[in-house]
Image (tube, rainbow over all chains, first blue to last red; front, side):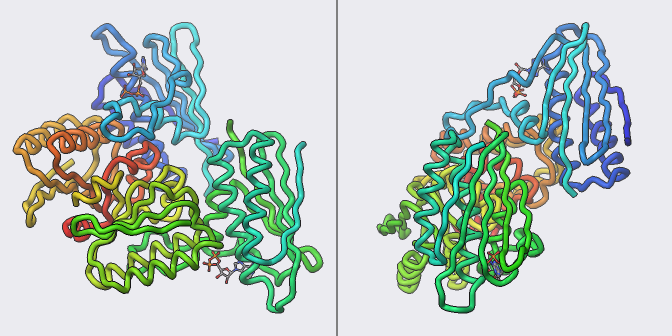
Length: 138
Length: 138
Length: 109
Length: 109
Ligand SMILES: Nc1ncnc2c1ncn2[C@@H]1O[C@H](COP(=O)(O)OP(=O)(O)O)[C@@H](O)[C@H]1O
Ligand SMILES: Nc1ncnc2c1ncn2[C@@H]1O[C@H](COP(=O)(O)OP(=O)(O)O)[C@@H](O)[C@H]1O
């Protein structure tokens, strides 16, 4: 079992650290650049949403990400102490609409679900915990 | 466990029977039109290949398809008595080539593997048996 | 499968409807080759009514593209249904054709 | 992210390189809006050097499309890398844009 944990603060600029961490892990764990890229995308969407929506105060908050890889499953657990939000209950946008009728935005959670094979959510005491799993066939 | 079996003869015109059968099963088993369409595509590719490549004589041959659906798995077993051919060993075409360099054809087996979640092959006495499985999330 | 054609401005618009499976592809190929032989420089294939395609149909799309590139012409596809787009994606075809959301947009180009 | 522009024939060709993630999208949006305000009728966005996009980048692509449709102009995208095409497919974006395999083809339209 391979595992790694990072702590990020609720600032968009932390995406760079997220990306560096993921790229390092993917090369250590021999995951393809294509997998790395799409997992990066899912994590960016989840992280950005927490930064943008989870907190009403102007205080710094810790957002932790735990990575693990075993039995062809890449797992990431994202924890934050923001307001309760369960993305598994977010309704999907209608992606068959023509350009004129498509709303701007509203794709983040949808992309997370498309990329990850399993997405589950738990609220524990004052934390949101998002469990993301991707099956790796390689 | 829901199951159904059909026998087809090695003629391209049998694709119509294949399609009707599949559409009936999908409506009985409440599988979406999108699933029905993509499974139809995979089966058409496998069937067409058998008709085109499996036999050197000009004789009629029986090609059987067994359908079953249980626990969110749609399974199809295709059996023919043609020459041994294991599609799981077929190398994938390079789908990143520009139009000019792309060969005409060579997509059939590739599409089968893309559509079905599991493809396995067995040669038993004088038969090719192709086991196709699709996970249904609905 | 039904194929019809219409000249709109400087483009020849072909409309294909129904299924392009192995049983239909020979007829489609014959019609297409005949049309291509007329040497049109700009062809748009309207696929709004195309609801099934297999590798034998894809094959012919690639033939059209190669022929049109050969004569320095323009070929584009419009109005793919989502299920057909998916087959295009799976086979890398969405990367080798000019694809427009609708006929209006395709004609404007 | 790097954005450059060049007038080729009757088209304005924009070339975007690098990553379009949340950290870059504000800068990209600002540059794009400024260019759109010049009222060009035909814009091609060359994405050959674009190797990452997130929803904040997709957002801006949709804004361009809506603005260009609003003025009755033409907007098309060319040379998407396979990984980016996949994101387009996932989000339904491959169905709402005119997408060309390469700049040469895009310019010809
Ligand atoms: N962590 C979060 N906390 C609270 N609300 C959230 C969170 N993540 C997403 N949301 C809500 O869900 C909506 C959809 O999010 P998303 O799919 O990423 O699209 P977008 O951010 O473009 O609106 C957001 O607009 C927001 O209202
Ligand atoms: N059932 C079969 N028996 C023998 N050879 C086969 C069979 N199916 C496929 N093949 C071989 O595999 C090749 C690839 O098949 P496919 O991917 O369907 O593309 P295509 O039929 O366009 O060549 C065929 O050209 C043929 O040589």
